Image (cartoon, rainbow, N blue to C red; front, side, top):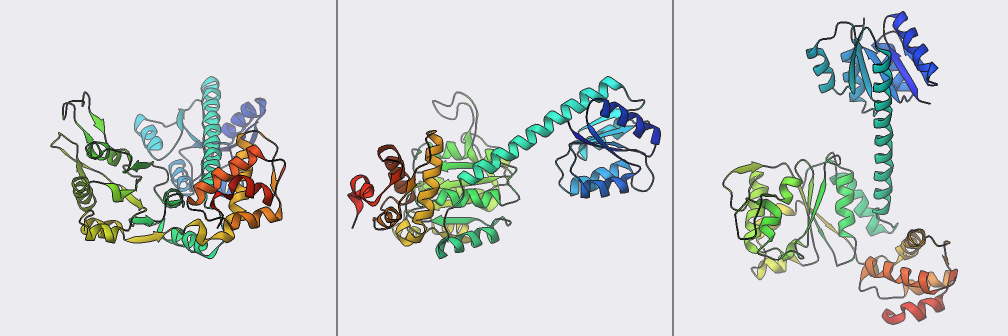
Length: 388
């Protein structure tokens, strides 16, 4: 059963639609004009809205505009006895789900309603999945360094400022980039990731900027690069300290001009991309060794965020270990295990050279090899190689 709002200044139309929809077991509310309709959507959440176009006070198009400003996810189906193709196109452009002309056809109403409800279900499922993914990627911890990073992210994310994230391998630099993207106005567009250390230097330019067919021996077809894929979204350049100098020069130009050229091509392509870069290297030292361009460093480091090592935030270890414990037990479909109090202390005594990544591996090992309660002795037996 769906909750439906019908907005029309003609009482007969409202009553007819209400009768049809209630016969289909839906819960139906009605409003006599756009003003009343706006008040209803402020106080109630609907699954679908039917809205007439020609109405006194606030008409249907104005209602639609104001409803879209409220960022509602509800499909709005416009209805009109004075409809033209131009009116229908205008309504769709402004965010309407569909347009039905009067006199209303029963089959058309029910088919359009069913499709709109399917769309609502997909939107809800997508939001649920996004929340699940975001939860899996959230930064766990209440230590002062992590609180400062979270505060910095909340300040930086709504802007388009470029961010350089530094820190050791396994500290969670990717999580910082994802968090910035998810809290930004670009979150409806993709976050495209490139691991600069994993791509051979001779292929990095093709990976970033794409190539035209025939640009080199193996270029059998045109390829769209990561910059184009991230248009209107975010490009995350991980391990940028490993990028070749020639690729650095092209990235610098792309950042300066917001334009790229595919390998083997001549046409300039405009791109709108926010760049977040990350590295485990000291780029200032790399600049002194002539391995990294200083001008690119200054372009990338508008905002600097340093992610501390796990050894610098040992107060967070119990929280992180518990998080991994629940996550991994769920993945393995095992009853949830628990740490004893002395086990937390033992975990905090370890020198975590591999940071969060190493901690997750250790927790997974303990889940597999230990009984329901994981003790300090278990830590000594299965994770003691790094104890100092």
